[in-house]
Length: 288
Image (tube, rainbow, N blue to C red):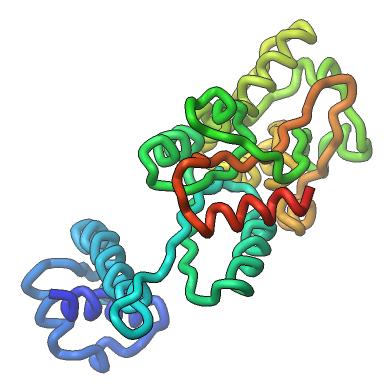
């Protein structure tokens, strides 16, 4: 079964890299015919069908689990490697997180650190149900969770982004009142609830409701969609790609006269007893 899944993954890679289909192992083609995992377009080139896409996701999870298994056991006598599971709010820059992991690996090269980006509700549920040892998020909701401790990690603030063609593009500061009459793109609330709530409150406090023309599933989607359609959007400073202004033809503006601080915090359960979590807490505290 696992070999069959690996054949599927190999076949998909072959299509992506234009490998001649006649060079693909016979077993793969046989599996394709039996399971109807592939279809052909008008040019007779094979591609994954809807059923194939569905199976591929499950297959990749199984193959990754099988590949990870040897790393979970190390040394003579079956010593189990220590694992640290970290959750990060979607779209945040993970560079500093990987610096933490590098520090951990300096003292414990065999440690396995698993990182997953997720929405705030999924991070809350994952921490509550011990799927994560720690999570990094700008949401204040973690301070209200029972048995959860919170450490400040990175300074983070809310910014306004406009198209490079926008009249405000030449500015570096803007007040919320100056955004009255603009058309907005916002993330769906589950993507960044603290951000959306603050934006609405700021607009209402300045005498208007935001005229929202687009709701995005991800911040990346907003960055791609908003500038070409001349929509104003907001973004956290720690979500900004290094080449954002060039890549998305957008300009970033600081917001004046408002509370726009949203520190990225580390939330964790102190009673988890994880040695690696204790080490990560010490690293974060040392960086303050």
